Image (cartoon, rainbow, N blue to C red; front, side):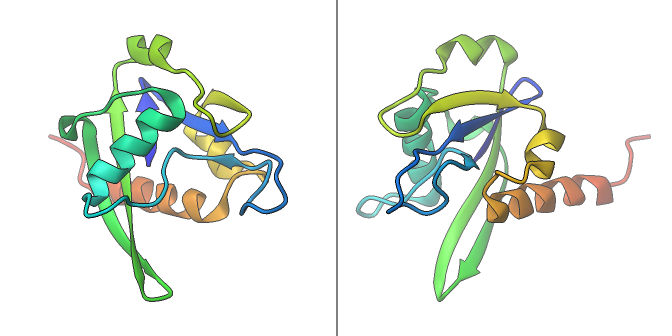
Length: 133
């Protein structure tokens, strides 16, 4: 999930464990479903567990389901007010939280590439929308 606090993207520096995917990379909050929870419920739970930010479905501004290796993966974009930055607290996974400009995340060689691509998909969709008159 890409979560914006104001105009900044919430990112996590992954642990440096050799047995996890993308050790030491900049990541976004998220993870696997538990039981029969929905994609949104999973993303919101993981966001709370990883950065202590409680989200409601009204915070979601975009969602897309991606298929890979026969499995479906939901990607959400959510936005909350900048004043909620003070709620961010690192959970039990990761080394640190960083609020990052979206362009910095998209260009960072140490960011998880498939999340860069998914975030770019959302941005390109915004660019394709007509300007309000």
